[in-house]
Image 1 (spheres, rainbow, N blue to C red):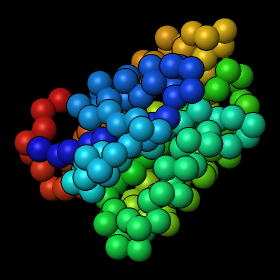
Image 2 (image 1 turned 180 degrees about the horizontal axis):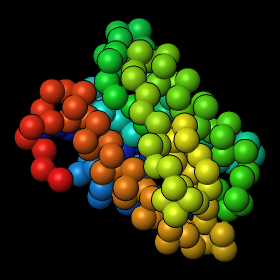
Image 3 (image 1 turned 135 degrees about the vertical axis):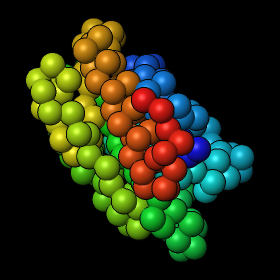
Length: 176
């Protein structure tokens, strides 16, 4: 079986709800990056796939997520995450809120580590309400995450579970 970690920051709990839905679909471990310790870094090093998630604040990733990314420079130097599968998601209160810039940041962060990026892969308007393709975009208006977005997050997680199994060569061991 494959090992997937959802590494995320959530400022107000909305992004954590999305992270939990992605993890549910993927059968993944959750890891808060704003409180990461040596055990958390080891969990990431051992994972076959990592899903990065954070809220979009002021047109980019949250500061605690950026601090986590900056702290990964030693991993970058050692190429410990080279060729792992990566994906990402972001959440904000508005429909757009420049969430694409955050997804681009997450994809670039993964690319700097030599990771292989997996896009959203959900095409219909029912599944992909906000029309993102690079990764998952969700909305939490008035403090409540849209139910359709949580369903999309779980579907995204399930897709990543299958991609990780294919990527690691264990697809035959995965049942749908």
